[in-house]
Amino acid sequence: MKNILVTGGLGYIGSHTVLELIARGYEVFVIDNLSNSHIDTLDRIEKISGKRPAFFEFDLCDKDRVDKFFSQNQIDSVIHFAASKAVGESMQVPLKYYRNNLLPLMNILEAMIAYNVDRIVFSSSCTVYGQPDKLPVDEKAPVQKAESPYGNTKQISEEMIADTVRASESMKAISLRYFNPIGAHESALIGELPIGTPNCLVPYVTQTAIGVREQLTIHGDDYDTPDGTCIRDYLHIVDLAEAHINAIEYMHDGGNKDRIGYFNLGTGRGYSVQEVVDEFEKVTEQKLNYKIGPRREGDVEEVYADPSLAEKELKWKAKRGLGEMLKSAWEWEKNYRKN
Ligand code: UFG
Image (tube, helix red, strand yellow):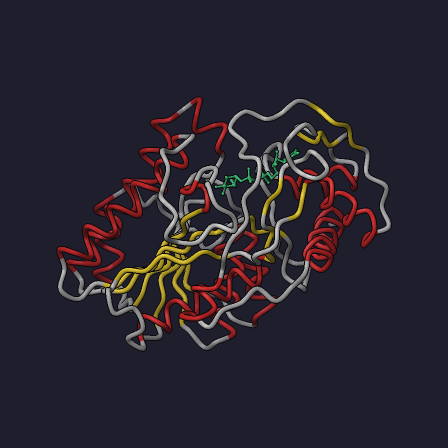
């Protein structure tokens, strides 16, 4: 069970997961096409862990290449991260998202069947719930019509995996529905580094504080929340990474009897955008230049997880608090800009 393929293993969540896998003694194989990641992350992983994962640079849309990889490497389980993830861009170029997010999964599932690899962890998102009727949201909440092609690809991927599991006698799968991962590894050597202007809140905050961006805009303060700004469930990237190893081990130990599982990964606690900004200023002692702007299209008002199923089944619980998350993001930003 020791050989794990991590697709998108040089990306933000992928690289932190690779480190956790190495720390727990797994052999890691990374496939990444570097479309939204950096090759020097491989050196940084080696620097932190003392081990360099086997690295394969190619595009998972290439079916022949995927088959060749599986024919040449003995893989026990797959953790599939590789995907495009900018919600706004997915509205403008939807077919890029359908191609990049669905074709690789199809190629991987077909190769898994052909080469008898029967465990996969899929990187899904709380976006599948839209604006839930009930908070905190648990896994029984209905999947709502996606607001964006990006969100739709997550829903279709979950269905594609479920259908494949159903049709197979041995395949097992877990979809992890992430809330809002932020922060960075404690070494400050890897972290979130979006190419171009960040969409997500925390990289925008840290880049503003360091002077790469002039000003943060808070997207709307007229929501029906205590301070008027949107509420999300932010969780530390290292906590999130750890959950993937728990999921692999859970499947290996015969945990998911139905052979298909869905788990929310969050802290269970929501924070508003304003609270995130205030906490950032407090823990880093930085003054942040920000203004209130209009609402951002497609944002849900408030969402936070009921993570109790992951705690019960996967024995996983987010441990790190908001201050620690923001401090680690800031340390990473400072360290990165120093070079
Ligand atoms: N926000 C701002 N200003 C910014 C950026 C964000 O006020 O410059 C606000 C947003 O309006 C939102 C909150 O901060 O209220 C969090 O926004 P993010 O963009 O960080 O994250 P989202 O909750 O929008 O998450 C979305 C999708 C996820 C997806 C994620 C990363 O719902 O499925 O983006 O791509 F994974």
